[in-house]
Length: 490
Ligand code: ADP
Image 1 (cartoon, helix red, strand yellow):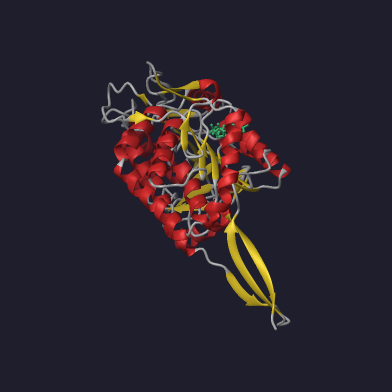
Image 2 (cartoon, rainbow, N blue to C red):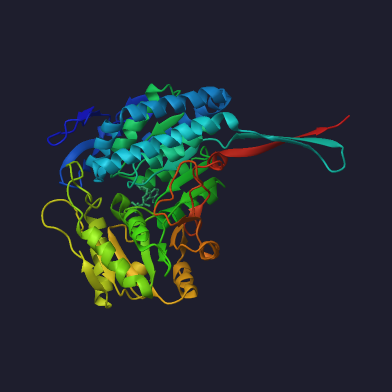
């Protein structure tokens, strides 16, 4: 165990920093470790076990060995493990939030919000675990009975990103437990501590040995690659960049593994001429600044009808200018740092490119001085369609405003991207809302709303934003196979 030097925040707990294999906390091969940094200060807050390929092999073997017995555990028992883990997460909200803020940077209030959101996946899937149903019918010629049951897919590879360190884990682990799948889990190397605290909770909640095995590592491709080629894993569930998702899909093809992919986004945020502008600005603050803009659901392109573009831009800029940028563990901080120097530098490059192509900086456009990887909330007006930020995920607190003249134009620009995760639409006209909602090539639409994520709803995208859905009634389907028994009638 390691204790974070808790100068500013006395609620930081003792932290587990080892691997979790077959129900035991163990050191990595050669006792190797890698550092975890606080992006608000640049300080190293912990050294976490640096899992090797040999450690990864032990993990997938444990998951393979545990699968058959785990699949036989009654659904109610699986449900109650999830329910207990849900209660423990809620009890430990402050501890988990403090860990998350320290390793990832989001303000404490947002980290607490993520704890509530992340925990809810466990509560939701504890309820789904006991509602897995099959089907019974007769063949057309009346000669056979068709009995369809639903069985766990088998051992799953789970790989998560750093931006929602708790919720991206619970969103995959919850349905896998509910369905009766075992798992190997690799959290992002920037944010392993929250995941390890989550695993500790599942251990306390009574998850049997081998069901969940966690390898933290600085060698992501080798560790995950060994799982993908193991022949033991039957499914991969990944959240992260489209680039890495494509690598995993190629690897999944080798062993014909089921694949769920939550990849990048390039969300359009459309404000029609008839929109309630104050409500649109409120929605924009949420859709743009939740998680400092480091979300695949973040509004990336603000398409605003020319007749209301100035009003929207000025009001949004005024709200953004009033925000406090700082260390997320300090009271009063609205916007924490970017996760690392590379993340911050990419945001600056995208802004510089837009400005070079004629964009006007209404507010922000630069980084504050001092340690940490901060970026000032930024509004850009008159952004050219050629700008790189039109075709790249910004992953930072930058709102480019692009005026449009007619709806067809707005939809054309909105759909002119390889991605299709979410779109936001602000209008008070119901016909227009339904028409544009139909035309947007996305998996989710926020109608007069800047937030779509909810454990009870199917989250996911079309085009290169991914495959499959997480959450909602369909979330568990990703972890189940249909199995059909043909029974002659006599
Ligand atoms: P982000 O840009 O959000 O960091 P990535 O796709 O790079 O997104 O990372 C998401 C997750 O995928 C992380 O856990 C990361 O360590 C892991 N990862 C990165 N590269 C690979 C790879 N080649 N194979 C498997 N996992 C990877």
